[in-house]
Length: 75
Image (cartoon, rainbow, N blue to C red; front, side, top):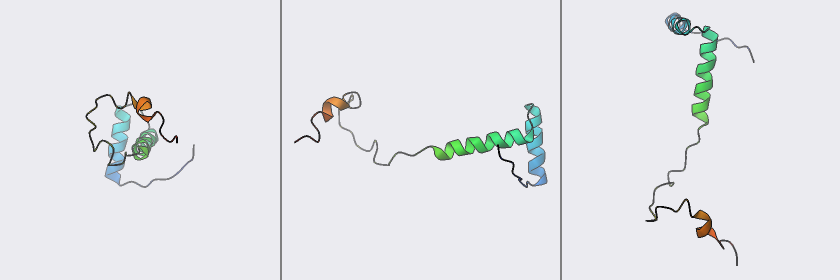
């Protein structure tokens, strides 16, 4: 763990402290959890917009992918 300093507005800190106290946590633990959650959300990769844009008319394409790709790339 790395130590850092964060400056908060007094009102924000008071709300943080009350929220943490109500849950039996230290304010620092609440901040760590909030940052970890923020990082998890930022890491989620978005699929390209093209994914799901077309319909093949076949409901089981994903389940039959190997069958459809058999021989692909062979000459």
